Image (tube, rainbow, N blue to C red; front, top):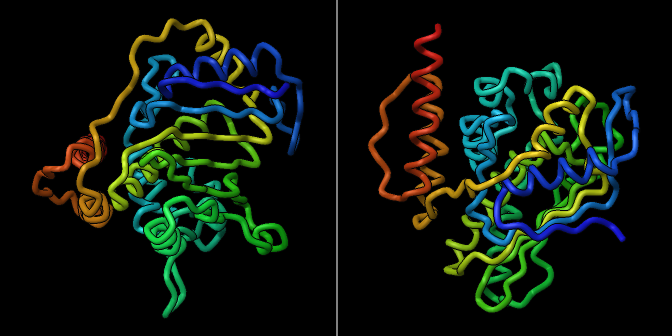
Length: 290
């Protein structure tokens, strides 16, 4: 039987995934990089706002998580905005500076002239037929396999299902790194789940996540073993998102903060106010270090 977890928070999930992979994972070396791997891992996050992985050992970066979220909400696909928060992102970009596979926002919010985005199509479908099972956003297309690129989307799809007046989200992954991937994926996709819920006027349901390969790289074996031993008390909850339009505005404001150190007026929406504080503090930190 494949592993399935039902947990209330990202912190507990990080601990439990480390226990599973380090405890029962098989050694595997794709692209000559040794990992421990468990196949077919799925989990449910019962409280999607408990999306912060703030375990001291992990040293997760809130600014990178927020920066990535706003990058996706803008529909961006250029690496500079991500490299500002984590220079290692440049290794995932092609020579022209574009991120080809992991630009989920570009595929979700972008559209050809005269067409609606996948996001708008899914939202319209659920408004018309709240019980629909067709509200699926796809992130992988044929060119992802046939075209030469250094970056391949780890996420296959994002599906929304409305049941009992609550919006549930389902993410399918081809590959998931417990240490570097899962914490940021959870923050991103639960935030998008909450954004869609607010735009539809629904409550949050559960977040479901399935990975064909759940793995930990050799460089993180020691950290993962220490995380596996932790007693977790902090649920890592973010404030609620009540004004979805605020997040779209903040996605634009973040460019001015990052590029020009601009001061932005406070947000009344609690979640966007949290995100603004995180990116502003990062801007001040980097300016002071320059």
